[in-house]
Amino acid sequence: MEHNMEQNALEPTVETVQERISIDSPEVFIGLFGIQEENLPLFRDELEVDIQTRSGEIVISGAPEKVELARLTLDRLTDILNRGEQIDRTRIRYAIELAAEGNADRIGEIMRDVIAITYRGRQVKCKTLGQKQYVEAIRNNTCTFSVGPAGTGKTYLAIAMAVVAMKNKEIEKIILTRPAVEAGEKLGFLPGDLAQKVDPYLRPLYDALHDMLGVDAYQRLVERGAIEVAPLAYMRGRTLNDAFIILDEAQNTTSEQMKMFLTRMGMGSKMVITGDVTQIDLPMGKKSGLVEALEVLKNVEDIGIVRLTHRDVVRHELVQAIVKAYEKHAQKAQERAQRGFYPPRS
Image (tube, rainbow, N blue to C red; front, side, top):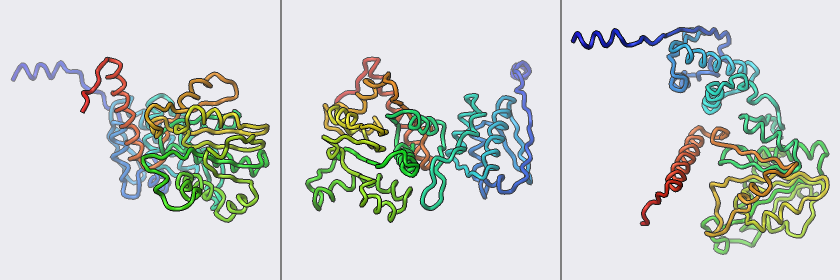
C-alpha cells in the first residue's frame, strides 16, 4: 500500500486549463452544436477535451494544447456561421483536422467563394480545400485531371464550371461524355435501343445539368446543339473547338480511348477528366487509360492534376468513413504485398 502511494506521488500531474467562449447568437450556437446539442459529443471526442455549454457560453477544459486547438476550431467555425453559411458534421471533422495540422487559419476559406448559382438560386461553393484547389486548377489550366473517391464533387464542380463558362460566353458548347463500360451487367440484356441502353451510364451527368440549368433550359440548349451528352465512342474522329469537354468515370477508359479523347481538343476548348482509380471496371488485363495518362502527362505544362481524398467527401459522413476504411484496407494490402506476403488462394 505504501509502495502504491509513493508511486502515485512520483507520477507527474497532468495540467488542466479552462477556456470560456461567449456565443451571443442563438442561431450560431445551434449551428455549432445542433438543436438538441447532438454535435457536442463529436466535438468532445475529436478534440479530446471536455466541453460544457451554459446559456450562450462554452466552457472548454483539458490539456492546454487541446484546449487551444478547440478554441481555434470553434472560433473559425463561428466565423463561417456568422457569414451566413451552414456547417454539418463532415465539415466539423474537416475543420478539426485542419486545425490539428496547424492550418486553422485556412478553415475560413471553406465555402467562401461562390463558384456558380443553380437555377433554383442555390449557391455552389467549394466545401474543402481540395475542392478549392480543383476549381483553381480548372481556371488556370487548359486540361485538368481530377482523381478521387465518390462524393468528392469531381463531376458536379466540373459541370458547374462549364455552365459558368457558357454563361460568360467563354465557350459555345458543353460536351459531357462517359465510357459505357459494362460493370457486371451486359448491355445486350437491357431493354430498348442503343440510346436507351446507354442512357443509365449518362444519368449522373443529366442530373447535374438539370440541377444547374433546370430541365427546360437544358432541353433548349440540347435542341440548339449547345449541350451534348454522349458515350465516349461518339467522340472518335471529331475536333472539338470552343467547347468545355468533361470526361467522367475516366478510370474505365482504355489507353487507346484516353489518347483518342485527349487529341479531340480544338482551339478555344477546355477539358476536365475525372475518375476514381479504385473503381476500375475494365476487363482483367486491360490497363486504365486514366492511370497511364496521370503518369505520362504529370510534367506537361498547362495540364493540372488534382488528387482528392476521403477528406474531400461532401456526402453523408458515413460515406467519408467508408472511403477512409477502404483506403486504409488498400494501404495494408499494398504493404503486405511489398513484404512478399500473399494470401493463400481460396
